[in-house]
Length: 337
Image (cartoon, rainbow, N blue to C red; front, side, top):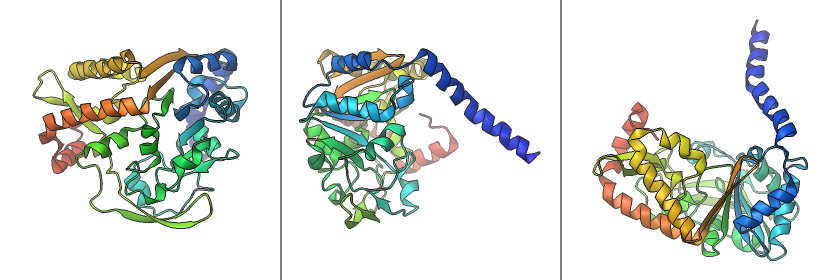
């Protein structure tokens, strides 16, 4: 009886994915020439530094797989360009992961945030930064410059980190079928986000991609609390909670969810306004290929915009960011994002 139950559970979990796989194979095959054209329209070209966050399956069925997509993007940026991806060992909360005190080895520790980053970190010629929770991998002309010295940063996306360097280089931030703004924590670190970190850093044993043993001390992002961002609700003095990764460029993937909540009508309007402003100024571009939303933003300009908005809204609603109150509300479920 137990065996039958396990089989049913397996079918329930796997069958929908298999069905979608074969559907994509028949109806949503990736045409590489057309995909290249879309990337070019978004602004990727020779010499570009491109930071990629992806949901590869959103593109449809890619006959040649993730290795070929990496080669395609690498060819597009050329010998003077660079491809960068996050290769985090955990897709969950940082504080949960550091509690395991797991040795991080930049040469072998798996990336667990999607197929493309995991394939990318194993690519020939790759460099990977030495950080136990927020390592990035880079390939190309600026790879060494971007990944080096991450182990000496006081926080995952702090000054001197790869994320700081991407902003200063005004890298292109490419999202493939995924909604989160890639430099959200960098914004939070710059503005001094309330309750962002644990009170004290942790020290974790790491091995760099050059085989060096390093003890990395890093501040730790709190769980859930930093995700909450207050924006005006129907009453301008009574804010509603939003998820921080919608700032400054709310993804079109989130429109249906946000637009169906009457309490967030004003906040949603503001988020769309921020996105439209960046598009109007030429710092954001979006297209759809094969039903997958692709968008690109410029790191330096979107960062400045996000920092200005975040500072303004934090100052306006600072009283709502009380640590004990937020912790209690999140536990009770009265604070929802």
